[in-house]
Amino acid sequence: MPLKWVLADTPDKDKLDLLSEALSVPKMISSVLIHRGIETYDDARRFFRPEWQDLHDPFLMKDMKAAVDRIILAIEKKERILIYGDYDVDGITAVSVLVLFLRERGNDVFYYIPNRLKEGYGLSESGIAQAANLNISLVISVDCGITGIAEVAYARERGIDCIISDHHEPGVELPRAIAILDPKRGDCPYPFKDLAGVGVAFKLIQAIARKLNLEEETYQKYIDLVAIGSTADIVPLVDENRVLVKKGMERINRLENLGLKALAESAGIAGKPIGTGQVVFVLAPRINAVGRLGNAERAVHLFITDSESQAGEIAKVLEAENQHRKDIDEETFQEAIALINETYDVESERGVVLAKTGWHTGVVGIVASRIVERVYRPTVMIAIENGIGKGSARSIPDFDIYSALKQCEEYLIAFGGHRYAAGLTILPEKISDFRAAFNEIAKASIPEELLIQKIIMDSEITLPEISDKVVRILNQFAPFGPQNMRPVFVSRNLDVVGSPTVVGRNHLKFKVRQQGVVFDVIGFDLGDLLYRLSPGESNLDMVYVIEENHWNGQSKIQLRVKDLR
Image (cartoon, rainbow, N blue to C red; front, side, top):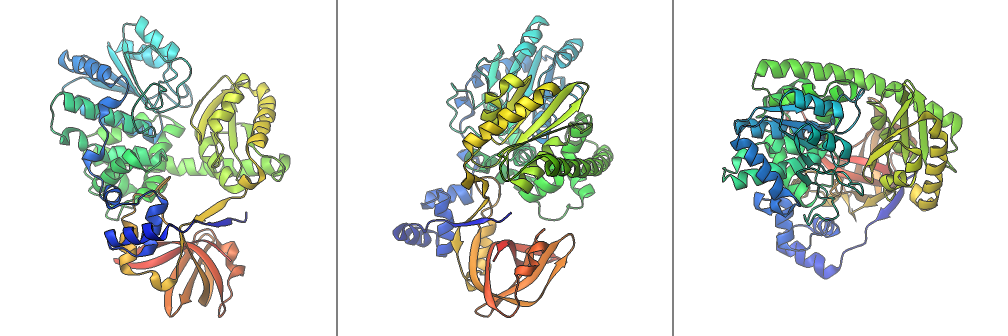
């Protein structure tokens, strides 16, 4: 699908000059910073060198005092506590953080993650019943619970107090819990609304530590797990999330957590630089796999064990499960593409709703994301089993898929999520009506121009402007993720040097030259664009990001192409 190239506006010259002078950086760097809302030296300090004190006061969050008081009471009375989490990376890391922190306080702390295939998402009565059987007096939910009205009521009947810690959109009615921590509550004054579930759990242990006058290291030492969960949940890496992930990445690279170390070793990335890319594409899929295909509690066990051999054994299981998951992914993706080819007119349809008996509920979210990449339409994938459809929805920018599902709720048994990703439950006989309603909403909300995928370019530069100093500064823009992606540049009238080739699995590899400066270029999965390259002619316009390629102990500047003409 052709991309629309959009060059960001050139910043005001005075702003550009002032920032370049204040930071002693080239104007191409200042331009990128200004596009990200960084216009002063102090802004740049917080961006490049975020500190712990840049975090917000946890007690600004609604109900935080009530949550902390109840947990401290449980600590003092040595009550049994259950941490109840979601089965994705965000939930798994949030459970691990709270279990480790509270066990260190001396409590019997148990954990429960529902089986994705049998119980589905969120609090369940069977989970609460298990808590009662264990004589639990306090349940703390993480990354779920904001819609668990009936389940919290059931817990109260069993004499169990509940604290909800979540980051999803609340409904009109809230559970009657002891405390509900969720920055997205309409009445919550917390200044940053986009924490991951593990981020909210981290704010909770930060608040407990402060109330108990504990050393900061007692909660800061879990920042590696916070960074993994936040990165994997694709939250915006700005404001407080940037602090958490930046600090967390420093700790991740030390591999102090035995489970994390074993996972990195089994994945083949131990001893190499680990950034958000390695978390999203290497570590997170392995952590997710056990929850997608069965029991996610094994992943919690990986992160909380103090046995190196045990961590190694669990990491091997995650490796095998992830390979199995990838095989199922690919089969489901091919079946979904076949359905689209048979039943959808992508040129006229605005939304895609696919359903099939036999699809694995644990992979439909991943496949929905791949379908969005392929057809650039909001997509809902529904797996039908035992008379129930369980679906995952993924969106494109500028289309709020949670809001769309809310407008279709008459056809749904249940739904939840946020503007970019959501889940739903539906009766198979309602899918046809839901598909029609969803498509009408998409048609009304998505004008034609939004269906053309844009590539936003930060700045137009020449190849001689790319120096070692520039690359060092660009590396400090990390961690990269939503709202802080790698800076994108465009250069025009480049020479293609030598003979371009297609390597590996359809990757484009070639060299470009301008004013005597030559760089290697790699284009992942862009082998189909080989025909656009004409060696010996200064006619190539290229959109790319600047990276370092680490190979055989050496680093070399490399341009990763995103599109070319």
